[in-house]
Image 1 (cartoon, rainbow, N blue to C red):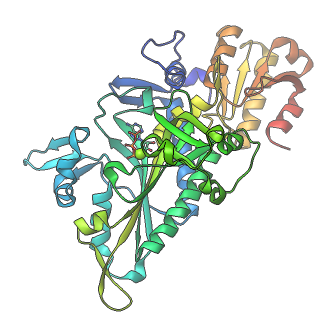
Image 2 (cartoon, protein in one colour):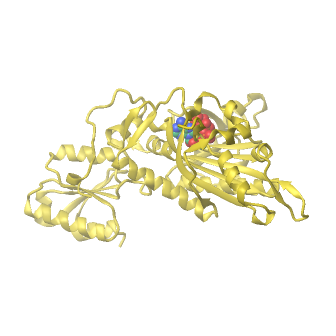
Image 3 (cartoon, rainbow, N blue to C red):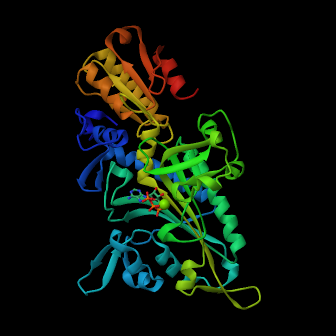
Length: 430
Ligand code: ATP
Ligand code: MG
């Protein structure tokens, strides 16, 4: 992508409404624009990252045997009246009446609708288990939308739902999702701590929240100090081992009953990036969902439900990975792989080197943002640091004379000169 042909509305000044670093950098780097409280346009750069996060989430779920669907964002109120949640959900639910005076709502979550789909097709235990998910927009009329996409009103969520013949099988799937979630967050460059949590309005007996530690997090957590070693990369543990360590959300942490000695107990703030629930029969009881069992008798279906805040994850990743100059994207989700800076557009040698690098890298499947504008050097450097691409190639007239370019690693700030060929080799991993 040539910057001169792209749409990258960067902000020079710190926006006064942004209280936390991720919100500030998302606005400044032209990723999002607020339309109204908690409602955002995803500008081109933001859209690219959102899609990458979405694809990683989908990829890991697909590998784990989950099946993707899309359900409407508007739901008939009748389903929610049937489950009993229409009145219980409260003001966070946006209620709408259509021209025929039918009550609708904008989906805050989708248990009722997936259950309705399930019961209209599935008759026998032989079809079980089934785990279906969607990645789609949700709306919750949050009383205090804030921190940008962290707590929006409209937000992008992965919601998954599994159906089982018995509770043992639902537990097996729950544990599997627990593992898959760790894999997803690791691919996004995050270490999430799974804390025991209250299941809230979604319901169910067992629940874990996946929390990314950040000072600006809205949740309070308590956990075994071993998690800090895991986060620091000093200790490796399987998710099964991790599960044995103490970790609890604020509301479930009772100091007198905590099994971890005081000196090993850590208290921190976290960003909730996902939550899983062993639901049991909450919705299948309310909505009468049975299948025929092996004995020919009808039996109630057991469920689990699994959410990930896809749009919130962008904020969490930035909170976890930035410096004073801007975002430092993990390679897996960076909007482009490489930023190519031409310091003297119009200089025959600089232009030729840039064009050749741009073409070779693009042909090899690398995503390159080529700054071919005539802005001054300082501005170009600052913009590239702000948007946080993993690699920068700087092509200036002096180096171009000698056929060398400078390669900068955004994360380490390390800069080194290379010939054009060597630069290509490094970036293409050859
Ligand atoms: P919170 O406690 O932060 O309000 P929640 O527990 O109500 O979240 P869930 O119903 O568990 O949310 O939704 C699944 C995931 O969706 C959450 O783990 C979170 O990452 C994300 N999420 C929830 N509400 C919002 C929001 N208002 N803006 C962005 N993401 C959200
Ligand atoms: Mg939650």
